[in-house]
Amino acid sequence: MDLFCYREGRLWCEGVAADELVGRYGTPTYVYSHGTLVHHLEELTRGFAPVDPFVCFSVKSCPNVHVLRALVERGAGMDVVSLGEMHRALAAGCPPERIVFAGVGKDDAELRAALLGSTDPAYAGPPRPIAMINAESAAEVDRISRVAAGLGVRAGVAVRVNPLVEAGGHAYIKTATHASKFGVTFDQCAQIAAAHRGSPSVWVRGVHVHIGSSIATADPYEEAIRRVVGLVERLGSEGTAIDHVDIGGGFAADYTTGQAPAVPTYAQRVVPLLLPLRRRGVRVMLEPGRMIAGNSGVLLVRVLYVKRSPEKTFVICDAGMNALLRPALYDAFHFVWPARVGPEHTPARRERAPEMPGLVSVDVVGPLCESGDFLARDRALPPVEPGDVLAVFTAGAYGMSMANRYNSRGLPAEVMVSGESSRLVRRRETIDDVIAHELGAG
Ligand SMILES: Cc1ncc(COP(=O)(O)O)c(C=O)c1O
Image 1 (cartoon, rainbow, N blue to C red):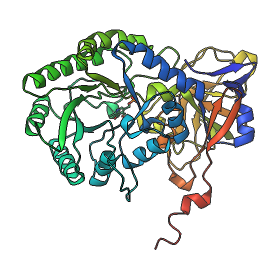
Image 2 (spheres, rainbow, N blue to C red):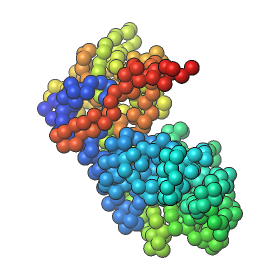
Image 3 (tube, rainbow, N blue to C red):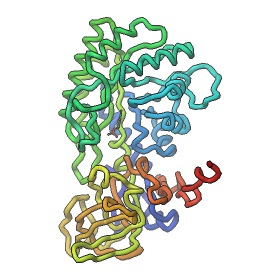
Image 4 (spheres, helix red, strand yellow):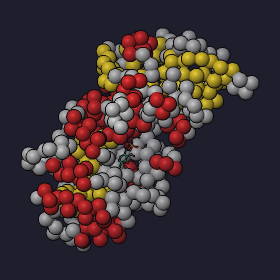
């Protein structure tokens, strides 16, 4: 569900028309719906309510501080994977106690910040450790132990394990296969727990899994969580009491209508497995990104040219893989449609091949010097002209967060809509911004 819809031939985000947003903020612009973000968070929290979930939004999916703040205000925690993401979470008002820190390559500065609850290198106040450091190797736990000992704190650690479950919409977003760099084996996890049992600087108290992204069925979760529950029992019998289980993120977003299962589809299969742990006081954590942010954002671009070659018609827009990398990187599908259409072209569903009169087959491409610079290929669209605005749907997750300055184009603007009001939450980068860090650097 999201609050982007067509009424009388115009695309609306909540109570604001897309063409008004373009008039005010220009293109390319990411537009987020506050109501959709909050609705998705609430849906997820409600679906998993029997296990009283601690929902930590995956910052990497949509890191704008104002997006994070909207979720923090509704009680979400934050899942971060770098010092920069932790900085964003704190800037959004998230208390350290609601932050979890994952990622395969944390350095001393990141661990220090996690244990102090501050990204300020000069911080000299009392330590306020984050909720959990999700460690990905034995060497990392040793490093956490050393940094924590230096600060005189005991670090709460969850060990990320690889449950060997194939899941995820694309090879690059599967994270729990034999070839995966993430996590450790169950045996290695048991060894880590044993090595640090009774340590004054490390408290191994959690198990973490994240099996991939864009997972559109509950089966792999069921499989992974069954294995994790078994591991928790094993660790308990070996003398390590686990009181946190983090099941990661990965829940799908709705790129084409009806593609993503509703929250209860996952929850009905997963909650019964977690309930016995919850009844024993184990805290259940989730790290959703895409499911919350994906359908909460669209990218608005403007058509510059319509170019016909003997083979194809290209709709050339003012942004492509620089603003939205997913089609180029993953061959990902995003529904693309004009922001203004005639009544015969009002889309009832967001689908690959809509059946409507008068559509033309086109490639929607960007202005960059790359053949992979496309937003949509071989797509049937209503005829468009230079100056028209196109909306790229389900762009809220891994959209702006993967945007780049390739070809020295500044990053897009970001706008938040709430009801009938809109506000700029990140100004468009200028060409001066693009070269700012180079001037005077050498
Ligand atoms: C450790 C971890 N948690 C959570 C997520 C969020 O995944 P998703 O956006 O698919 O929910 C990711 C994404 O890569 C991740 O690596």
